[in-house]
Image 1 (tube, rainbow, N blue to C red):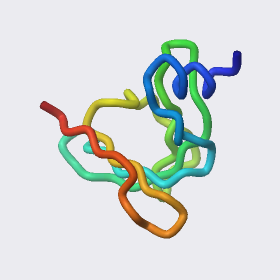
Image 2: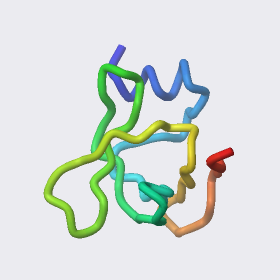
Image 3: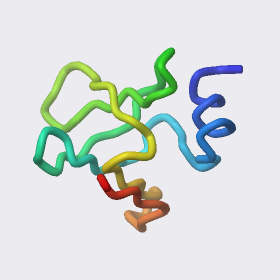
Image 4: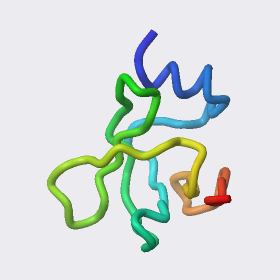
Length: 79
């Protein structure tokens, strides 16, 4: 099972894929980025606009997922 498969299956997010646009409340600021993969901790790797590296982001905390047309697929608040 790939790391992204783990996110899809075990975290209940079957729509998650590499290259998907997300919006994350990261360090008190809303940042837009794309999913570049997943990691061993069961979290997503997200490259935020303007960055050369990816950051570790929880797939169900303070994140919003968008489809290719910009529609919101799912949203998880930081509460």
